[in-house]
Image 1 (cartoon, rainbow, N blue to C red):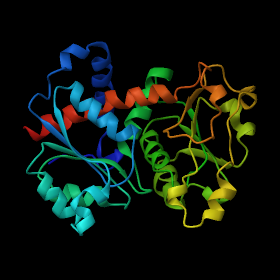
Image 2 (image 1 turned 30 degrees about the horizontal axis):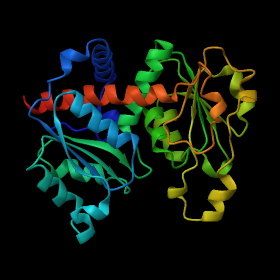
Image 3 (image 1 turned 90 degrees about the horizontal axis):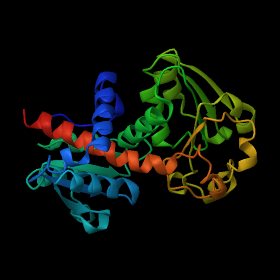
Image 4 (image 1 turned 90 degrees about the vertical axis):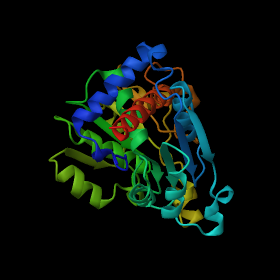
Length: 306
């Protein structure tokens, strides 16, 4: 049974095919309006979510399917102590495909091992968030027209940012990519990501604490929020939460075709004054996420039917 737990579960060719499907959905929505008629998506969200959960639901409805599920752990049998493995087995009796978010790293993997239907990881703790990466890839492709030979800056919480880890993993498989890591020292990219992804794939990368210094060379700037829910110490969070705030003045030396991205939700790391800048792409990312989740649901259901 094919699932998507980590972005590297799919080859570059498969990612390119998903992007092509998503672009076709954008151009020909009516063609896909009943592709999942009679199918059910179960959304198992053990952790709060707005965009990801509603994006999955919108994707399934626009494919003509239906949605069942829950949006918080306390409204499920997890509150009674049911294991993720048992939940996956139970839900397999009711639905055709699962989208699951969980605060613990590896939970989606456990679900996929025990389910008899495809499982999509909608975020597992600080580990990874592959469907956000699909949204990110489609956004970069639609804005820049390519993945090769881009300089991509990641700014903010690179330690706990699962969206950052997933996108670096995906981009590392394209040629001529340069990664710029911008963060406080306390929130640097984990050494295992640098070693197992960047260095293993011979990706050029630099680390800095100065966003404005590297701004002129960036093709893509991926901003992230400092995540309160990942901190064990409130004092550390309060000290670091405003480390980087993107304001119009900080874009004075940026490229005219810079693509500014953010997985959302934002707190105050991007000023609302940036929203009207044509380089702001974070709300486009939201829409692109729906299209890529539609393409992914189609792919996994088609493979399950074989």
